[in-house]
Length: 549
Image (cartoon, rainbow, N blue to C red):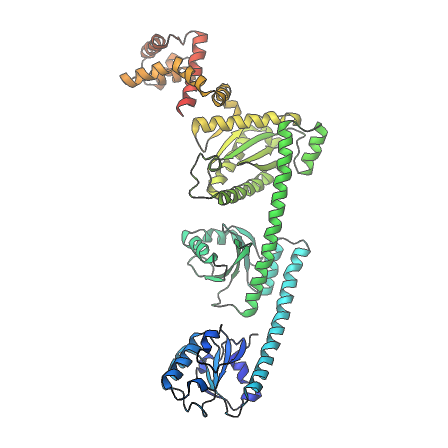
């Protein structure tokens, strides 16, 4: 228990002391004892001191006596012990009133009491209390550290902190996502949702920067004391003690502080684990897609070590973070903040894929999350598409990131995984080129776009020339005459050259459609009724999509 003014007043040496003012403040905490016989003593106080004074330095000057007492009160001292018969007859009435108002104890002690005796007795009480406090602090630290030494994780740490506090405890990351919650919290996910209001997030962001304890009392959110978890001068998360109390005891503060220290160690360990996982999986993925694995058997063994079963092949899903590629504004995010969001997105994808198909592998590489989807799920195109859509959605919901997706066809042989990765990469690039950021394309839908994209990346002028030789004259004619020849051509080819279906889609007569197609032949010299000409027009439309996207 902390030493209070009341505890000091119980000393035998102060049995004849008299409270002049501030009797309601006897519960003030006291940390040290000092003699204040100089006028500027307040300049040397740091708070919590028991100030002893005869007021010799301000004798005979009531105004200076007032100023001396005011400054001692304002300095945060715990109490003022004075002798008032030798140098000061009476304390000024307004000082007594101010002390009562501020609940600041002013204690009159007998003239014959030696300061050395009082200092000795009071210091002994303080030292004994501090020794007891240190012992309790060491016991708390040992108990929490034992969780980590025994291999316990976030859940065990939350339960132990809750036991020591006798209050429910949660650990949050910097995004206010629950890392763990003590078993005494029945629905931590509901509390997490309540934290994601703009007002609460702003409060955590503003108050958390100080690194000091703050109190959250917002409607819809359980009342809680929050202490930031800091590592390397940077906020890493929060420990929250859910309590209806208005303040914490000294022991409760010790529990929170030690819990935050141990949490910073756990975060450091998580970081090491994360970086190791990313490196090992990244090295494996690099070897697989480059064809560097010595044999299929060694590839399977390495995959199995990482929890990935490639024995039945796999389907590659490539998730590209558009902000990382500069395709979407970073919204004032710096590189470190962007990478932190990417890591959060990667972790969420890993958890989901692991739950959906445990034999799969998820890796992080240069702004991309690479998924080797294994097992029977990988051979079900509908299931693959559904998983890809969910993973894409996590980008926005979990990390506020735009995600583009490329999906490869199923690769049955482990040795051909490189081909699967290249297919996913092509699908990703084509999707971004045609649909922009946030696209999702399967390689089976890429078709001849693959060849055009390859040419575009090496020599864009070739694709531009193809467009100019085929579709550009039609576009110019449409722009000048307000016609729909390009749309007619595209619809006609999409409908497998059916005049009737094209006429129906465009709400026109089939003779009108035929006239438009003849006009296209007149403008370009290419007839849709000749196989070679039709292929060039089809490629021209795709070149147009790449060129004008």
